[in-house]
Length: 176
Picture 1 (cartoon, rainbow, N blue to C red):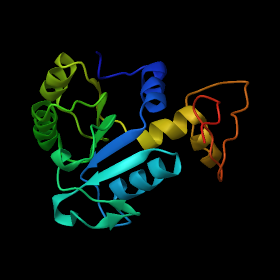
Picture 2: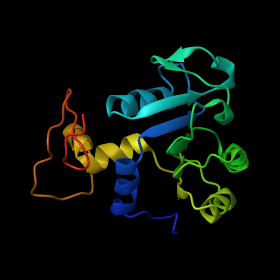
Picture 3: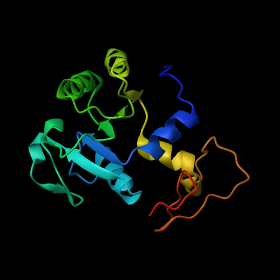
Picture 4: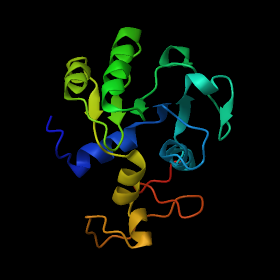
C-alpha cells in the first residue's frame, strides 16, 4: 500500500464500510480536534467509543469513555488514533495483541508509523495514515465545498440529501 497517496475509492470504501469507531485519545475539551471529530462522526451515524484512561467511566458527548481497547464491548470496525506517531505503534501493538481485530486502523493528521502500518497490514487490517476521517468524509461527500473549500472532486451529480441538517451521504443511499 502506498501510504503517500490514497485513492478516493479506498478512503470512500472504508468510510462506507465502517460503523463503529474506537477513538484512542478522545478528549472532553471542546477545542481539541478529537472532540470535534468525535462530534462529527456521531452526527454522521457512526457509533464512536472514546478511549481515554484519564476520563474512563465518564461521558464525552453522551458516549461512555473506556480506559483501553480491551474494555470495549466488541471489536470496533475502525481504530482512530489521536496520539503521536510513536504512540501509534504502541496502539497498533495493543490492537494486534488483543485478538479482536478491526477492519481499519486510521492515524490522524501528522501521525505516521510505517512499521506499525506494516504489522497491521500483515494481519489483514487496512491502514490510513496522516489523514482525518472528518475531512475525508466532508471532501468525498461534497460537504467541504459548502464552506468554499476545493474538494478535488468534480461531479455533475447533485449529492443526495440524507436525514438531518446538511447531512449528505457518501453512497447516495439513505441509511437512516
